[in-house]
Image (cartoon, helix red, strand yellow):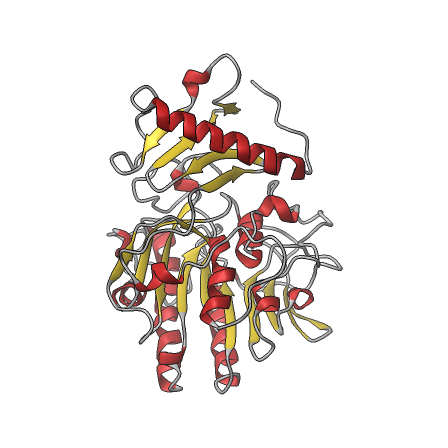
Length: 414
């Protein structure tokens, strides 16, 4: 089971150093399970990040790396892509409840076209119009509400999720609760409004926390708590509000940590020891191969960029299966991250997207020692020329592999 928040910041949860927002239920999950403290979204905005999460592939492979899907767009996640729901054994019931944002016209819509048995939610972000709540199962699609109450979205998603759990208590299931909160607009539920020290943003996060507690209580009441893996993460970093936890930049920011690094918590009593924390690098593309391994299923077909991180969930000392992770900004490679080092080659300044490694100005690139400088404040290129050469080679290899897959024209150099 996956709870995917929308625009939740790395520093918003108490378990990741947050102080203003009260998140006791999610913090308890962390205390009873594992925190991955160097976990990345596969993009700095939502559509490509969700594509990466569901397919285990860098979003550029799916054709969805550029920007996000808008109301007027007619493209979506190709049916040839294999999602987590499709890759899990047939015995698993699957549901996606909440925000889809991977295509809202045929043949990409609804999510039951991509292996989910049930869908209940929205076609895209709740700041887009027109907006309607829909449900699907099998070949049917039903309009539930063409003017959903914004302050009831989180409540409705969790309530439908609880019903799905109840209905499938006697079989294995995969539930993805893809929340709209705390993405703007912020519309706190009346029961939570005005309670958080972090104002409306904190109110909606505290509601997520309260419903997470209700979900765990449901698992316990049904006697399936010990059989259920529960994960909590975000689709990217925080936007206009929220805490990046001291990391540089925010959602949409090219190259820097704040747009990509997200909290990740996993709890499975009996399989994940309590109180673990692991700093090994990982990414949401790892969830597909990991969940298949967790379920004892065969690997997904085709090219998978993600890796099985089961070892990270059960050992604080386990190393990452990745030599490096690639951070994309749209279809451009913005940074390369190894366990210790980060090579940043794209950034924003005012209206300019700067290509830091452009010809003639190699001194603009930034080599960061993530062990000593998590805020990405200092360039170590002159001190570690050997490391710089290695990272440049990784960048060239990644560009050679992925640039032919791009669907849009390269950004003009500045």
